[in-house]
Amino acid sequence: GSVIGILGGGQLGRMLSVAAARLGYKAHVFEPGAAPAGDVAARVTRAGYDDEAALRAFADSVDVITYEFENIPTAALDVLEAIRPIRPGRTALAVSQDRLIEKAFLRNLGLKTAPYAAVASGREMQAALDAVGAPSILKTRRMGYDGKGQVRISEPDDAMDAWVAMDDAESILEGFVDFSLEVSVIAARGLSGEVVCFDLGENVHRSGILATTTVPAKLPPRLAVDAALMAGKILNALDYVGVMGVELFVTPGQLIVNEIAPRVHNSGHWTQNGCAVDQFEQHIRAVAGWPLGDGKRHSDVEMENLIGNDIDRVPEIAREPHAAIHLYGKAEARPGRKMGHVNRVKPVTR
Ligand code: ATP
Ligand code: MG
Ligand code: MG
Image 1 (cartoon, helix red, strand yellow):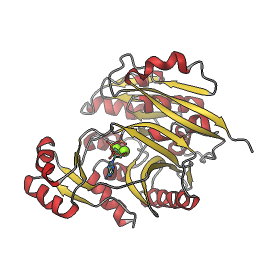
Image 2: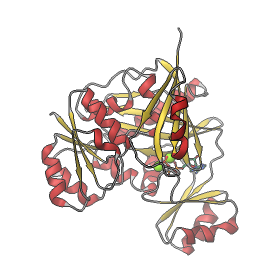
Image 3: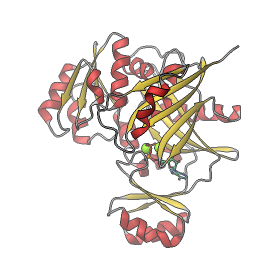
């Protein structure tokens, strides 16, 4: 095929479009909102996920459909899937669209997660608090990202206020994990079932938003192997095709899975300047049925997200040696909005 369909025209859709173009494909982006960042694609359709005719025309015009964001309505996916393959597939979407289903899936694979309980009423809030305790975090089951839809519960007395703040949204209470480090593994699985992992990145969040990812992560080699095995288990269980981000908490002696994202991931942006084949090319290779690229890291990298007014620092950053700048073409710098990122590269000398 020669056209890759991408659902979502944010920065991830934009960078996937660039990777598709580099491999000789055209990208057709379907953008349901006002996201501007997909405009580098050969073609952009702006229509809602409830616009069946637009969905059909989009699917007809592409050879395979992938996405930059997991929260796509089921009805839209049904329309698309009747026309073209969606990769990664529907199981991965169903699991990752709902934190409760995701946690149960991970537990079933024998992986460790934070203790959790479902909350859909004030009464269940009390039961969940009895089971999970405090400190804990109440999160909406669906649609949350960048720490949105989450309320921290420091002590039991905070619990009812937290539930009220969720405005009746079905939620999950998670025990607070006392981690020493957050890391993520960006893994890929090809159509043939081969699995390739990038090196672990060490993540620092500020106000619930990823601030930096650093490779190599300061982590015992044994845990890095564990992380790759965990990712392989998850990808195989989902019969997955594409790139996935797996966020992990490091605690003494073990790794706990925070969440999975069935797509290229912000914490994998370092691969653009740290590997010959980055996560975006890897994803396009996978969904287009190519052999996967080698994910070996050739450089140490610190990725810094440029959020909101950070964008004003670009002129200074542009004077730094070894700083690769990636901007998303968003006109307006709102607080908390991801405007771009910079990869500061240190070649590994062998
Ligand atoms: P995104 O999808 O943008 O990564 P999100 O909104 O899905 O974010 P989470 O990854 O669930 O949010 O949480 C954001 C951050 O909050 C985590 O990276 C971690 O720093 C902290 N956090 C979340 N859950 C827990 C937990 N159970 N224990 C300790 N810290 C947590
Ligand atoms: Mg998330
Ligand atoms: Mg997260």
